[in-house]
Length: 139
Image 1 (cartoon, rainbow, N blue to C red):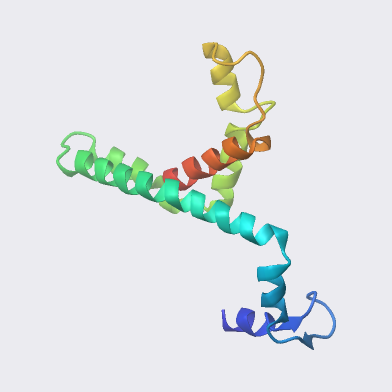
Image 2: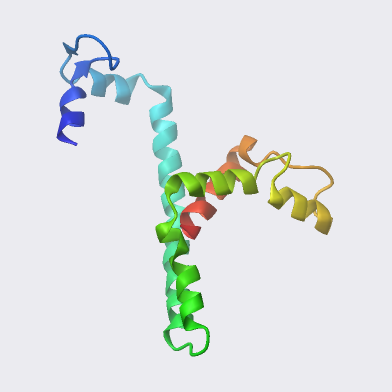
């Protein structure tokens, strides 16, 4: 972290010599970068939706698992899966689930009659944010 902070004060592309620029990188980020405010807004939206859902679902699952008798180990193991699954694997799982051509969510919704043709989930700004919230909550 300290090294990242240090190189943030340099103009450097990862190769070659570094040129010290002071706080110019930060000034450019806050004043000239059009994606900074959008990424900040997306982060706030994801946090605002995923945090309450995660807390409420976590409390609900904890309540249900607290006094369960039969099958307690199985439920605890299934509940623990997201903690041992790597983020890369989680990304692959969700990209396969929501793939617009061969994703299981589209197949299920078409089979149920909710969709007539596959939906491009990750191409829609709102749908992709909902998918990310679902992924964060599941994890």
